[in-house]
Length: 491
Picture 1 (tube, one colour):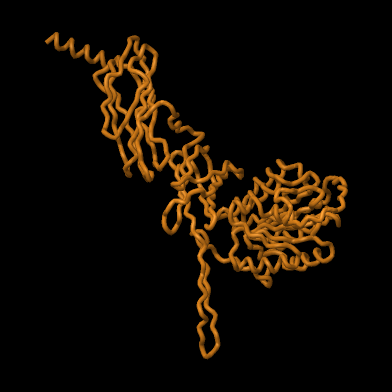
Picture 2 (cartoon, rainbow, N blue to C red; picture 1 turned 45 degrees about the vertical axis):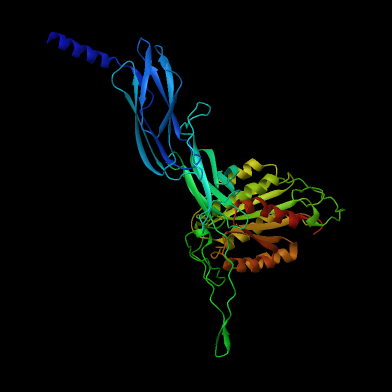
């Protein structure tokens, strides 16, 4: 009896001194998609004062492993890489028992996850130590972005994917043959837009983290409506009723109607006008001597010889209607792209409007790019739309920097909703264009066809254009093209 008791006590002492420890005993892979990491490294440390050995690894059939060594000196470590088989969809929980010489009991490692999608040609390779495992840190994550045809579900290869975080372009990527982009992306709130020729652009907005590391974007081709013959009643043709489909599978928003006869909203705050602006040095405008047509000039050319100095006043819509569907992000990206190409002699003023009107920038030079971008980045949406009042303020600012030889232009960026506030803005636009040549153009952010027709009528009185921006590529090019077009000396 005494011998048995001694053996039992020795056994407990043996187990109590077992000190080969793992840096983790569980790992959750989360949702797994093609190209995602499917392995994890577990580090084991010998905290005893004797040499210890890796004895055996008892694992399920679908788990593969490799180890960096079998012998552990005191205070040394080995690494065991465990890899799952991702060739079958569904949730999994796998327990791996790892035995060391310090104990009769194993160290159990539990691996969990959910294989959401299998690659078109799944192949589970044997693990090796030639690549880094997923860090699962708070800083970056392997993110999978997949672009498919909304009708067929087929992947769309060579789609352009723009990833935007904190109002700056994190990167531009192109999908592979499986319609996939897989990149390490820092933790954050992202606007991810996908584009492909012959498709309407679409986007995703949301947080990227360990649990949300997959983005599916569906693109659809524009619908071509066939003309239907008119229906005749009593020999009088009755025009067919055309219903517009929502764009890009987005939630249907209330139609924004511009009613020029609408009663004004309750009185808004009187806009604050800065009466003094920095001293602006006189720029000598060179004479135009080159007869090269505008269309024949390189798209990136923007020199003083061919393009006049610009006095640009932007009116930015930050009303509540700009809050959804990536509209504010497109507005900001358009401003960033234009700011990047401004010349030092160009002057830019910015006002924003919702229920009130306020000045964001007053006569900043083209060399103050960081200052301009910083102010644009702070824009937030709120309340209703005092667009009419904003137009009046914009012309007051533009006239303070006005010079006959400059390209004096007011550009409004909006989704079309400026149906409250002052109602005499059309007269202001027309008068300034007729008397001083100040151009008025409108940039429409994802506007409907109905709004587009009204915008065309407004810009016609100001000698400008209505410009549609629906994709990130539009944001990169279209406003710059309008500035080049209106400032061209041979115009």
